[in-house]
Image (cartoon, rainbow over all chains, first blue to last red; front, side):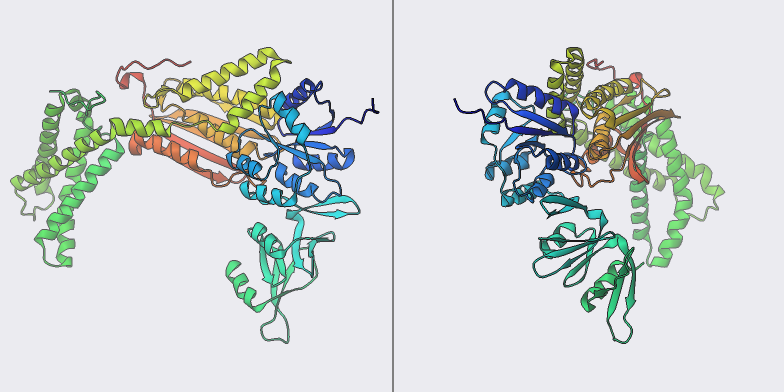
Length: 253
Length: 348
């Protein structure tokens, strides 16, 4: 007999306590066929992110609908890890999401979960591909609550509500909060599509948070050069001529 | 002779005390008046003077007629349908004629209105209106309304069903008693969902059902759900459409509690004021973006059912009040004896 390989480590994520308890029970029932070690529980995506960084589970049983951060967004941020855990989504009922799971060969569990089904899912569990996740997001549209960046092997989450502006650089987007700057790999166009309700374009390369606009002013000397200042930031951001008129329409008050 | 539609229900005279009925009568009379004046005058200035002069008499007459019909409504509807129609027409003609007779001289009498003209006008408008109400009663009361009501019967969200079943399963080993109670609650909820959507039910039943529903939600959501009941002054015997409150509360949980990590409070306030029943449901407005946008379906559904049951006599108002979202339903207070004594499946 070979030396026994360590048991797969599993994290349970669901916002409902009974659902977590049930999953633990069914995992115990499966122990004869497929033993695992449950390393923890989390009741929302944010908490899950933290625990995953700390405990580094092999498999995450991830509920889709949760407060704070839903399962799909959580999985998207986990992509930034060097070795993301395998993910098995779970949902009580979600016609569109299930269709998307099938199409993208993503494994999922329907609650209430059956032991046989769980055994099969555990056997097949694998890390997800980024494009499959993006398609899942489309099937289950929701704007993300956080942006994320991998800094020295750790995922840093940036709450979208803390973001003052987003500025496109060559390959990256600079994310500015009151505290500091981050560089994320994303496209400004995509971010604008997703976060368009909260942010307004003031220049070809810049989106600002609507709620943080403090003043719009005219640059001295030039005829129609304008700038904009945000709360908690001294920096003057250039407003292009085209966006200036749109901006004035939008914030007439 | 009894007129019955194919669902074996009476075609009845409308309830002349109902706002919607009054509104329809008033609008028709005004339209007929305008048409009459337009036919008689040449230019727009003459139209105004003529219309105002005529209105001075016609408005009080209309008002008196409506009052008389409302007062006699119960008696009229107790008569055979055809006789009732005749008496209604008679009343609807007599009152305006008498009004013209008594009020006409008081109002300056510059009108050249003969009593015969008034009688003919009232008779014609009355006949048109009765014809309209007959058609409306036939179109609305039978199969169509009932099918519509059945279709509108609130449906349980599948998400809630499966999550509840999952919660019950999690209890089976550790707390079988609680699991039993939860299954009983679930059974009660489903019995109500499959019940007859046409029959009004006592308010107390609906409150009991809502409690069963909230019991189940409490199981899933635990401390996150806080419920505040203010029903000490509710008229337990008031009749309301089935599944009026439960879907409101389900909506409140779905939009106000589930998207939040922090505990939130749902409050239910049910009371009677004069001859109206008020139902007020409040939930916190989720600060986190809700999982499903634009889910106003449940409210629209309830609004339409209220309309089918009470016409314009029931109202539903929904509005955000700061950090709280409030839905306020107001409907007429009716009790068992005012309804036909049809056997109502008893629900606990």
